[in-house]
Image: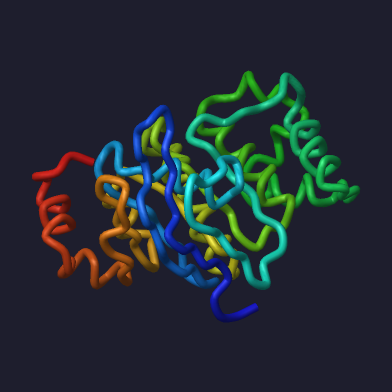
Length: 228
């Protein structure tokens, strides 16, 4: 697939009388990872959940073009009280997929084939997150949404997750990810979507954003004057 895959027009979201997102518009295409960054409370996680269909917009529209399956990975993995194998098999079953080979293949992809029959919730935090990644990858999605997938991990575990993401992105899988880690964004992002106070301020190639952000808000954020 090529060309635009996701159009967002005038997207808004309010909860309990508080506007979280206001008039957000952009287009995402397949290719290099898109990272959503910005200060605390900017609306990053809400935007990701809207794109994945977990929340309903208060205004605007989200239009997909030419995209098939999508998956999402959260900051804290939501795993069943079952084995690693059964966690992935359950996700495949819900999607109507009966290919057991995908389980072993995706566990090899994330470096955990030896844990296939272990209880998923007994694994370390980093291992659990890689199981969650394997479960998402087993669906062979066109796009994976990731909400700060390494935020609660130690540096070694975070790097293991990053390595998986870099490999699947290199194969052409589209990643749309939120992060507070600017070093991680520099390493992995192809483009940056910068949110501030519920509005999209910039959508810029990552190298350009970090070298010379266009907006005063982004400049202040990178200086540390606006906390992220």
